[in-house]
Length: 193
Image (tube, rainbow, N blue to C red; front, top):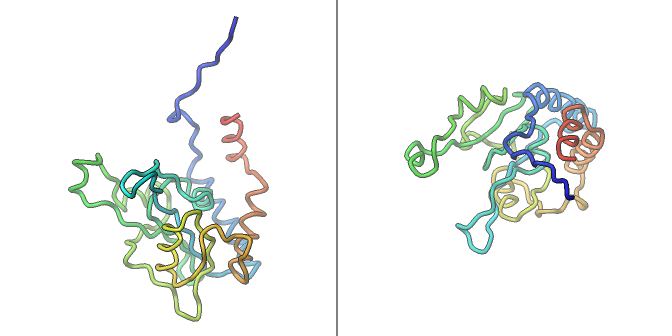
């Protein structure tokens, strides 16, 4: 006799509350500032192509972005500046695409949902050439090129081992915090197991 357990549907996965991500951003920021990182930017990335440009894998945000925001938001940039605080830069899709893609979330609705100010991507500007934000590299070249063009940086994708200066400090903070799973992370791990 073979026993099989019914697998839960992916939509039944427990979703962490927004408070979890607000608290993570506070802990992350506190630790980053202790390491001398005052300005930072993290990309969510873009869907990756399979065998040609318009045949894409389902989108999954970069892990560090997901750990701090909790949502898979394609083409978004999470930014922190000492002078302005946290903001998410993202462009909602034009309403006419709803016919093809279904209802689209507005920037205002997303802002309320994730408890972050959401600004249009066109408003993003690094503070100055002398003060470029610390960033972490993306996993694919296309997303990294996009991040580099926005931030004025020149990092290669998947170059975490070669990071220096503020980027290395930012990576160190991220690794230290993510190695200690909070209760929300433990709940997700239990669910996955």
